[in-house]
Structure formats: C-alpha cells, structure tokens
Amino acid sequence: MKIFEEIESEVQSYARSFPRVFNKAMSEFLYDEEGNEYLDFLAGAGTLNYGHNNPVFKEKLLEYIHQDGITHGLDLHTKAKGEFLETFNEKILKPRNLNYVVQFTGPTGTNAVEAALKLARNVTGRENIIAFTNGFHGVSLGSLAATGNSHHRGAAGVNLSGTSRMPYDGYLGDDIDTTAYLDKVLSDSSSGVDKPAAVIVETVQGEGGINAASFTWLRNLQTVCRKYEVLLIIDDIQAGCGRTGTYFSFEEAGINPDIVTLSKSLGGYGLPFAVVLFRPELDLWKPGEHNGTFRGNNFAFVTAKAAIDHYWSDDRLTRDVKRKGEYISRRLQGIIDLHGEGNFTLRGRGMFKGINCVNGDLAGKITRRAFRQGLIIETSGADDHVVKFLCPLIISDENLKKGIDIVEQAIKEVCGKEESIPEQKDYFEAQKLAS
Ligand SMILES: *Cc1c(COP(=O)(O)O)cnc(C)c1O
Image (cartoon, rainbow, N blue to C red; front, side, top):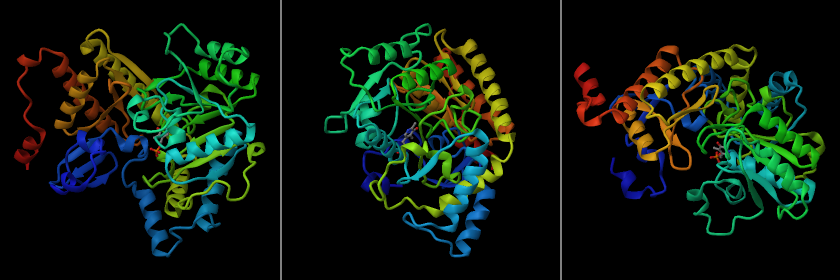
C-alpha cells in the first residue's frame, strides 16, 4: 500500500521489519490483507500476554459498549473503574500482601514512569534518580533520561538530566555484584553521585536485551536502597502481568518495592492503560497536581478486570508460564549448543527469553528469515543482537513448538554454510500453492 510511504513519517520502526498490511488477529496469530497467517512472537512488545482479541475479554467489552458504558471518563469515578480497582485489590494486591494505592496516569508506559519519577522527587526533595545500563523506561524526556539507549537518547534535543547510571546485574561479568558499587558510591560523600530520590530498575530488561537480574541482586539492591533511604521503583511495564510467571516480576525475589509501574499487558486486550502503585505514605500528591486527559480509558478497565478474573483467580497461568518457560529454555539452549557459533547465549526468565547472537547483523538475518516462514519475531539490545521471544503467554504448545522450530531452521541456515543451503521456498508462495 503506497499511502504509508506517501504520508506516514519515517519514524516508523516495527513496520519496517514486517512490511505487510495486517488486517486481522486472533490469539497468537496475525493475518495480512491477503489472508496470510503469521505466528506472533512479538505480541505487541509484551502488550498481548493474553493474545490478540482474547474472546473472553472481547465479549465483556462488547457487552459494555452495547450498554452505553462510559468510554472516556477523565478521572471520574465510574462503575467500570471501581470494579477494576476492587478486582485488582482482591485478586492481585491482597493475596500478595502488597499495600499500595493506585494512581491512574495517561495510558502509556512512559506516562506511568514520568509520574513515578515525579512522585519520588517530590516526596524526597531530591532530584537524582539512579538508573541502570541498558535500562529502557520510555522516550518522553523524564523517562528518556533514565533510558540507556543512545539511539533514543540522541533524539532528545535537550540535556537529559537528573539521573545517574549504575551497572546492571552482570554488566561487569557474572562474578561481580554491582550493588556493592552502588553501596560504595552512596556511602561516599565525594563519589560525585548526588544522593538519589529513587532507583528505577527492570527485573528483566526487555528493550535492553533480555537481561535478567538475579533474585539475590534484586534483594541486595533493595537492601542498599533501604540503607540510604532511597525509594525503589520497579518498572514492571514489560516484565509484569505474568510474563515471568508471577503477576509481578519481583515476587519470587521476595522484595517490596516502594513504587511499581505497570502498563503494556495491564489492559489485557491491547488497550492503552497505565498505573503507578505506591505505598500509601508516599501519596503526597495534591489534587490534580499530576493529570492527563486519558486517565480514564474505561474500555481498558473492563478488559483489565476480565483479564484478572479469568487468568489470576488461581495459579493455573503461573504454572503454565513456568512450564512453557522451561520448554523454551530447553529448546533455545539446544539450538544454541548445536548452531550457536560457540558464543550465543540464552537470556531471560519465564516466557521472557532471548538468544544473544552477539552480532546484530546475524540476529537481523535470523529474524528476517523467520518472517519469511511466517513468524513475527524481533530483536532487542544495544546492537539489536538479541532475538527476543515474547509470544503470548496463552499460546498453544503446538504453536510454541512451531515458532521455535522456525527460529531453529533460520539459525541453522544463517549460521550454517549458507551458500550450500538452497533458498527455502517462500512461505507465501507455499501457502498459495497449498490453497
Ligand atoms: C515499553 C516500556 C516502557 C514505555 O512504555 P510506552 O507505552 O512505550 O511509553 C517503559 N518501561 C518499560 C520497561 C517498557 O518495556
């Protein structure tokens, strides 16, 4: 379709990796205009944990629309919002002994991060925020200052200030606990690092290359934060909502962050929705001090509640994610051992996994080949060198296997003696022949 080249900005990114016009979607599948089917291992960059157009949520949403339920509600109390809050409190917060208040922000992840940083600064009266190497927290200026990637930072056009960078877990090698460095820096009044309001961290870095922090490291990080009375913000926008198995990605580490950001899969249906959770003592906001026109996406309240009711009333999804996560690890490790050029490594936790191909060109070739076989899968990391497996959590075992098989074949072809392997028959040609 010409119109995209004609008037859509050059800023588009995913569209370049998957140059088709998509038209329909269901569960783990996307379909283009010509009816070709694609297995989706990108899943809205972690927004579609429950798949595309989940029929359970769709029914609730259609029902709500038919009843002329509120669509846009600013921050008014609505029935849909009240029901979401009740469900979130009863089924997510209380069973985990988490005592948080909920702030509704503008509906994207970066809106929640901005609010979290602003709150931490206002509550402590300090400006500095500690962020980590390879961290990604969004691209509006406050969040961008906490984001590591130079491609994104370079577009800011202004000084990105108010943050200091510390090495993430593993950044200096497996044997070095980088929280010891943070501890030292905070203890030393001449370290040059201003006492921070907060530390912001992902438990598994998504855009930064699927780097998973160890539970010990996360606990040590919390200990350092407590020691210096620095707030701990977990940015759970991508790792949360079940991606690692538990609802919050920090549960297994046994930590209690002061502030948590959620978005991406929170709305369940792919609808924009973001919140900040924090200890009630931190709730020093004055009415309207922080706002946003789209804090009341009531459709998302309806589907978010449906997602919690359906998937988080028991531990079935958690067990399923663990099981599939182990399968993914086993398969990816096998692929790495067989075809990984000796330097590929497995990354991540739960169903948040990646293959570090070390080389971005190689990773790009692999994902492009996979796409030709009908698999949508992206790369992440500083040099786009990590092939990122982010399929919907509810994917069938059969399709999970199928997607990994496609990647295995692509890696075999890219890393093997490419010239000796005949070009695969184009997937779409094959589909046409079959039909
Ligand atoms: C995606 C993401 C964000 C930003 O969310 P947007 O909706 O793109 O603004 C922030 N933090 C993390 C960890 C993310 O993965």
